[in-house]
Image (tube, rainbow over the protein chains, first blue to last red):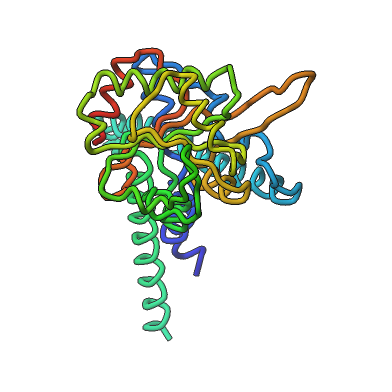
Length: 110
Length: 209
């Protein structure tokens, strides 16, 4: 079934990937927005940012701290990889689109 | 048999589309309010969005017991300090004083809530001395303290870091944080870090209320 319906399963995997990535989009959006405005991000004042977990909270056990760190890193990796694929795919799509418009994929007439 | 297979295929396709739509909604939610919002944390912990819904007993600089829901009906500008911190806390207090001076009408329908990271219960005079140090007067300034567990819960809700180290003398480290809530108690704006542009700081609070 998977072999016959590759597109459906590829889209399903992409959708799951997007679901894990969606919550981390804010980190990239606000960093890019601040940079575009010439503002500085004070990383030291952010408690958790794009996989960075910051210091251990008062009363937090080692296990809780490690779990929080692992969770942050997982979601940061999901977001970074998904956005990379999205941007790369867009650029590739645009280039191939131009080729397609130029007729590069048409069968040459005999 | 073929009908079952087609049914499954359509289920998977529909699921994919729904997941994609959910992802777009989550991404939009996290960036849509002018501040980074964590979708899962806010949905699983709605208190993050409503300061007056946060539980706990607090004590102010007059020794009065208060709850945060007592401040419903007032605009709230909240922050966190270490009472004896001489690094960023004086800057935080100066910023709030500046906002107060620039907005004389705020005292009529608003309140500054200054939470202490340390437990100073039973030491109302010390909290009053803290305000006196900054030459602050007025009933719209409330320094609130509580037991360590309540403060920890509050700091966790806003994801704040704080630590006091004794290295010859006390060293205070904490997130510099402001929360602005409207009269219904809903958080309209969160700010982290010290804003060097003071007029921008004032405008951001004003525009949030």
